[in-house]
Image 1 (spheres, rainbow, N blue to C red):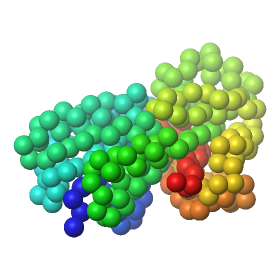
Image 2: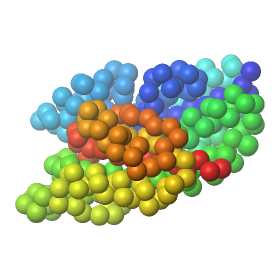
Image 3: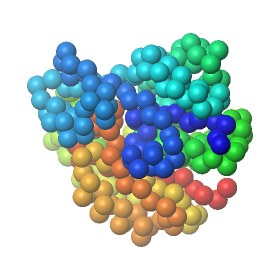
Image 4: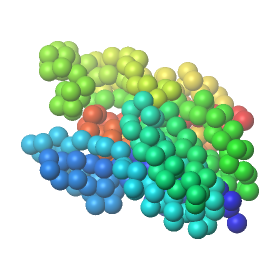
Length: 282
């Protein structure tokens, strides 16, 4: 029997089958559209989200309230007193803070440690999966955290943005910047590292931006066996084509294809492709 229960949030982009197989509990973030609020993946499906994304009001996302975490922690406390809760980078969201408030609320029932992934999407998902596997092996919470510290430093994430339309709508770039980029057909390539999102390149075409993702991944991964996730925003077919190229360029030990989810899609829009990976040399 596991002595540590694993929790993450919906931004981890984990497939439902992976969640079930690894016995990971997921707390959904909230999506706000005008006056309406939805739980990511619970009361709002991916298909419904993308319909609303091009509606008159741009959706926004918010961290779960502490009460959502309390409910999950209390349920898990009946199985094990040690809980490890792994979440979206605190530099980008208040999710970790909400989890910490909840952890204090249930301190008499469970020993909850909140772990900052310093990442997004499968950068969180890979950590949650590693924690869950380690818990099944009988490792203590401190031992699991030590493994996550090592893995977190080896996770790289690169994303190609097909249009600045949604970054403009969300206020991440100005309208003038978006118009200029559109005229010049500039497609930004982003890196997410240590919880910070930064632009690492500007490419004239989206196919060129995807090629740049492959170059960056190969530079970091080398020939070492690598675990890879190709993530997309409502672009499964394009992601599958990109995954074929990934297998040709990297020494892929295991590959996942998944949906990025609303938190990233609100800013990058449909068609966005990302690659998340880590070497498996340890």
